Amino acid sequence: SQTIHQWPATLVQPVGSPLSLECTVEGTSNPNLYWYRQAAGRGLQLLFYSVGIGQISSEVPQNLSASRPQDRQFILSSKKLLLSDSGFYLCAWRPGWVGAGYTFGSGTRLTVV
Amino acid sequence: KNEVEQSPQNLTAQEGEFITINCSYSVGISALHWLQQHPGGGIVSLFMLSSGKKKHGRLIATINIQEKHSSLHITASHPRDSAVYICAASKTSYDKVIFGPGTSLSVIP
Image (cartoon, rainbow over all chains, first blue to last red; front, side):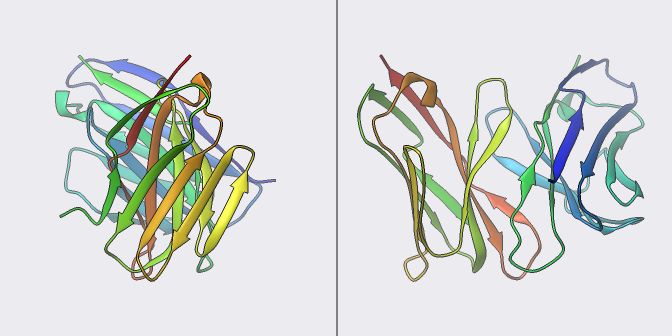
């Protein structure tokens, strides 16, 4: 069966430090991968999505970047965190065929101090 | 106007009550999702539906494509149902999910 792993679950980082959040999917190949963010008191917002290795589309200009070095690995990064980067980050995947449902990771709670 | 809206924003119910959360959307969709987010933040996918009705335990989700409306019902509510329930739409034109603002449910013993 397919599973999605996201880590770490919680993270406290100082302003200006780098960030790396990792998401991996098991049990499938060539998934579509997504990073979402939920700022405090707000709904989830799409940050990046990828339909294949090395293919990254950005939805919102920001201090973050994403990479897909392997088929089932999606990484969210920042060179220098800002206070405004605090929030709940959620990874998700879905098969590439039309109409397929999404599966969400358990999320990472990031606090920038 | 948000593409996906939910009502009510907050809901408090007594244990055992029948609960309904509503979702309306203004975009063409390929599927409608209902998600549950607990206080710790983790999100669980409850339903994905594109037509009709689905049931899982005490949870029932319905969707009316013509009216662009979906409902999540909880029968015999329990305090462990307390969570934020999020409606999300997969758009037909784009391969992305648009999330609603969420409904915060609190079930009191």
